Amino acid sequence: MTILHIMGMHSTKFGGLERFLLELMKKNPSDKFVFAYNSLPQSLEFTNKVRSNGGRIIVLNTTGINIIKNLFQFTILCFKLKPQVIHFHFEFSYLLYAPIARLIGVKRIIKTMHSCLTTNNSKQITSKKQFSIRYRICTLNGLLYRIFDYHVFVSEYTRKQFINIYGNSPHLKQIYLGIEPCPILSFSEKEKIRRELKIADGQIVIATTLFALWIKGTDVLINAIPFIKSDHITVVIIGMDEQLPFTKKMHILSDSLGIAHHLRWTGVTDRVYRYLSIADIYVQPSRTEALSLSACEAMSLGIPVIAANVGGLPELTSQLFEVGDSKTLATMINDLISDSDKRKSLGEKSYEDFKHKFTISTGAEKYTNLYCI
Image (cartoon, rainbow, N blue to C red; front, side):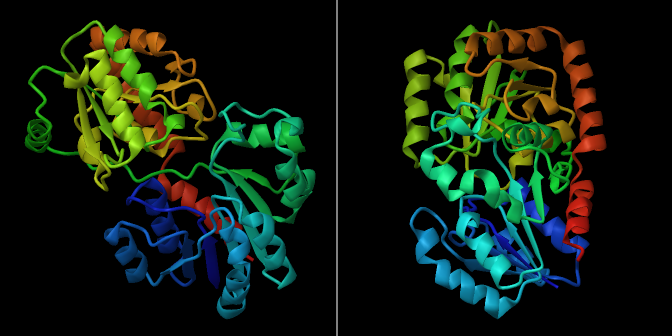
């Protein structure tokens, strides 16, 4: 069986989603997987592993007007590959491509909702009226979603949000993608990483993994630092591309607040676990988030997680602050810094929750069942 994934994204690292796709391939060794990205993935390790597992990566740009420009290319691709399953992920290519797939006889069409439904200013949508007129027309006011055999949501929040807007259906499924547990590093390996980042002994390390986007809330965390009472803290920001204007803007913000000496920036990396391994606290300050695989990685290491009270993040942790509230975030960090027993207890709960809900094998098995025709 051939399974075509229309990713609708630029893959910049060997992250949680890429690892999940590889797990799907391992679960279904007799099937042929083809992944269509907007551009070739930047991680050679990921592309090599896809190929070594018998998969294939192609470029099908579905950003903006390219959705229409590449409609013919998509159609030819379907006739050439003859996929039994087409699985849509990001972007809006499914608005045109899913009906085409149905017309040419693709047996199973799946859409995974990786994000919350939000307005242009990242407010959570609660009714159809909040969508743009263009979006309502393109989706036929939601009727287009009925074309999918399965509509999968990465969190319970996103499933309920969709139901509240469009109504329930037996074809709506909630599946946590899950992640591989991060490897446990030795004491000497951790000390080496601390030295690389010039983190002094006795420092509490606060980590976060973010893309260079406003919705990820980097500024919320940076603005919290002046309100943290202890001076013995280091904040490690993982994953932000140093060449992007937003990252440079965040450097300027930290300089203006006089707290740049507390920050360490790793840049884009395939080895997120190295930096998470030295963390005492993990923070997910997003303004919108369906579910954070990065937070799940921290949970797999038994790190307590503090997160914004938005989207699917409350499904990961009880330690929540309201979106954008830097002062409350700082108060919660202060609480964990001053109470090592609480840090330990919350870290243990993080690990237990990870084991029971967010393992990669469980998520991949559930998706495998959806692929069965």
